Image (tube, rainbow, N blue to C red):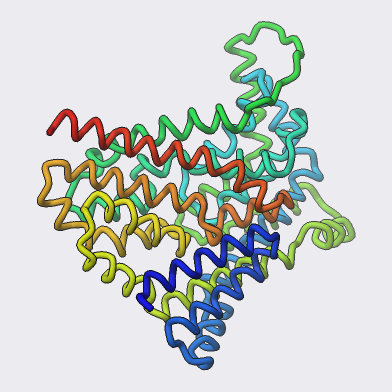
Length: 410
């Protein structure tokens, strides 16, 4: 059996298991075992992959980061800082829907692993007024977290693409701009469809009032911003930044140890830790199997039209790995001859990026999606039903831009 058919079989299996509501952790664990079997890994090889995933220092720090985010958020909520911050933001924007969208979009400006978990408790606080379902909260937090990934040069996807294909970052950012515009529009239209805000009356917003509310918002969320500052500017790992700020917050608010124990018991999540480890096991088995390298070579050798390969290769790799850097690193070297030989090379890059990131949004091993699902205790099948149409429209945005480019340059 060709390797791409093996991967297709695994993808169908994942989708079916999700469809029949098998737990995502069990789904991915089964898929990892089937993947190892189909690609000839020995039991010892699979065991080494599992051990590597469990003991890898980066994976351990990721799990620690997520648990610290849960505890840190619970502390901020317990003290009332979150409520005060959201209230201040509401005074500025006057519409809870704007507040719910803007929080993950702001935190999404920085590419921090686990950033979706930073915004999740804030979105939850802001969404209470709108009485949104867990699935709608998941969609909004997840979607608006990713609206900048197509165009901002701080994201690895963009500068890695530029370095491989030999184009400048501004060129790629500009051609990808329709994706960000479409993502923002789609998020608003689909995320808030049928959602009404309160008819609360407000006085006229003066510049002084806006400045005061902004100050209160930033002041109450100062610990969150310190985490981002330490991680991005001082290059401290997120786990250590969170640990430092959490300890500082506990000392500042003088939390009694009994209350800390109660919050830890209530909010720390073994299920989330297990899920993250299972994702890492799946990825380690995938790497050890050499499956994606083999599939990439097979698809490239099939002689399919360049446009089809540009769509299929990045999306397949992005969906199965859950990492945008993986689809860029594995697919763009293969696509490079088509990109360099065509006057539409820049638009091939745009379409490949859009295809990969669209599939990435639907990947069952996408860490942001998995973490947000777990945080809100949302049903996976219902969230996917919310995601399918927006992702399809996002992909079609790329197709439309490509068709326009063919028409103008053809």
